[in-house]
Length: 251
Image (cartoon, rainbow, N blue to C red; front, top):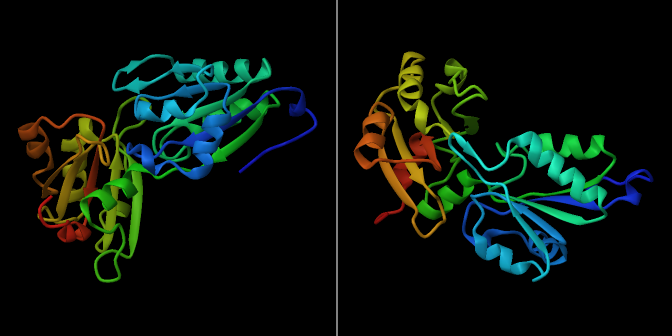
């Protein structure tokens, strides 16, 4: 998506670019081209820093990474930073892990920029769920195993877990939960209470497509103890569903 108007033509512009799930080769051709053109690159901790080598040597690089309970900058200040650099006439690439519009606060940043009259371009990226499925050889949908796939966030802004358990606890559905490691006990119990069998295949996937990627197959019922046994920490995905029976041999 690209916005344009007579108002914002006086200023610089911003591209919200999906960097992909980790492997730097998974960025799109368009994303790579815009990085080469950028005067300012504002990037997260889930971005492989090798991608920064695509930018010009004199491009400003600003790290605004977020990790659990520790933010380099609050979201409001990141949005202010984007606006200020664009108002100074710069072409800014906001490089975000995964896809800008999948649990990445791209919508908030776009709204702030548009409110300031700044042109915004959105460049999609491979989200973590798709990277995980490709890395470990299981489909997210399958005619016999999963006719739907849902992406949900494992916690709200106040870190509580408040999901629609009956809607999620459906057969023939793949559930992918982002940012859910700290709420595993609630997630496991909530889905089982809503009727999803405890022996439903599940997996914890750490840093999909990165060199350090790991998958920990288990069941819905054993998700919490598996995370504890292997000390699984964010960033990690939770995947639940019969498609996991197709995980590639040898992973």
